[in-house]
Amino acid sequence: MLKKSQTRDRLRPVDLARAYGVSTQAVRNYEAAGILPPAARTRSGYRAYTPRHARALAAFLALVPGYGHPRAAAIMRAVNRGDTATAYALIDEGHAELLADRRTLAAVETAVADLVLPSPSPGEASRAASSRGEVPFQAASWGEASPRRELFVGAVARRLGVRPATLRKWERAGVVQPQRDRRTGYRVYRPADLRDALLARQLRRGGYRLHQIAAVIAQVRAAGGMAALESTLADWRDRHLARGRAMLSGAAALDAYLGDRPADGEG
Image (tube, rainbow, N blue to C red; front, side, top):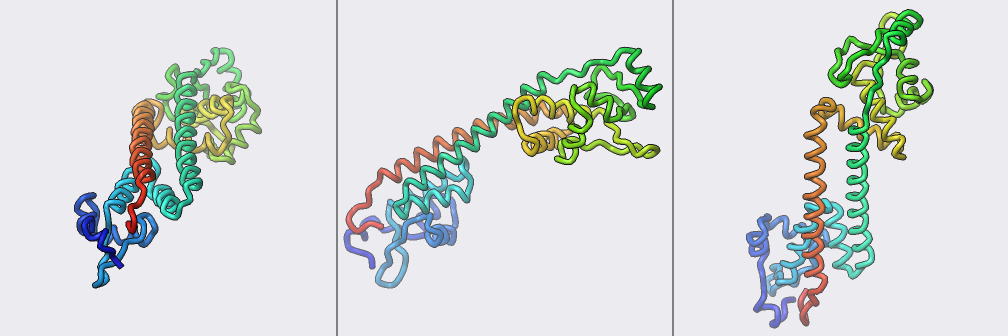
């Protein structure tokens, strides 16, 4: 039941909804989910929120952009039940994920900058063509080479300095996706496949696991190649910066809520 000391600061669900740009049903849902502390009730049974509820809502909405809705909700639930240790651990997890994303981005940028395809000598190309039936890959700008230029797995392995078995392992992990020659059934690497293999080699040298590399190369494929990847990486950097800033704002709002000791009788 609402106490007299709370009447002065009473806020209706609609008051919170209007102040923070959410629906009144969302306010009720947040309370039911533990994101807001329990509200007192008037004699007629209506919810009566207080400025503390408003600060809780502000903290939650500030946390969402940086930590995501599920983690922000979990943080608020932990805080509201007095389990600040769990709340801090959830915050730490969010920062650890962002740091891992930053390191992955740095690795991709380094790998892309270091990608160099050694051009085969005429003699090497001729020997490959005569002894293995391969179409020599001679494009100076391999990222823009004609898709008709193909190499078999042995030649790709030699170029990269890895074993053919390593390339097959990468294929099973989804890192590379070579096509099959219709006549022989052998794996053939086109320019985009060779690009992926080169990028994988660089990331493996950086200590990344195959499942991580597969995720990165999927980004390259989605971007439409290395040329388009530049804008994708720039957008990736911007999103990291925005998320870092959002985490700071969310932490500040949460700190204000944590430092707000409930007044006598306030929910």
